[in-house]
Length: 214
Image (tube, rainbow, N blue to C red; front, top):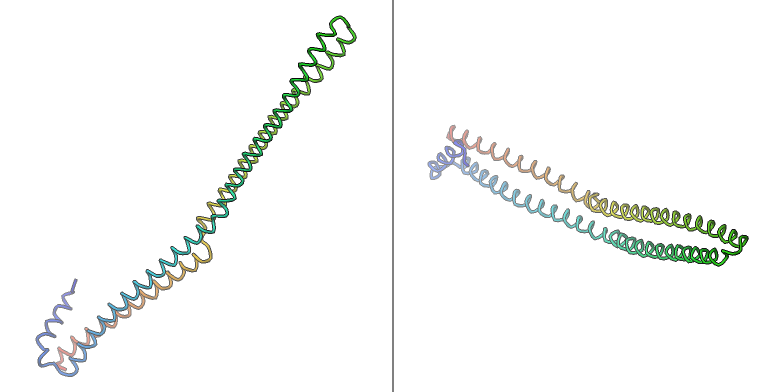
């Protein structure tokens, strides 16, 4: 919006246009040049800032691309973890099934030795020992599965944290692009401020020259 001062000056300029002196004409030309410079610098500044912002977006896209191997690592660890867990469970199942078969055989031996006290005592002792083995194998299996599951979960958590850091941490390219944007913005603001100062000075000079009939 034009200021009262600008409106008055332009009114004065219009009235004195036909009879303007070389000084006034020069003042007017300087003001026109000042305004053109402000417009040109503003357009150039906007173009520069747009390019800087594009550079930041490009650097961020590159950051996403660089995170792809980490995503692949997460996928591989997840697949390997599930496969290893399934294999461990299958192996444990075989061990426990063998223990159960052993116990079943022990019970048959106890039953077969019912008329032989010595043989029965030996069979019962074997059965008792095999029951302890089964109990220990079962406890070890539970501990193994829990331990493996915990390690598996921690691995996946670490992978996800690496992905998160890769996506939120500014890379050197992003930091450089941001620094360029900040520097250009500051320089543009200073340049436009200088342009406006020059325009204000030229407007003041025109007003003075008109007043003094220069």
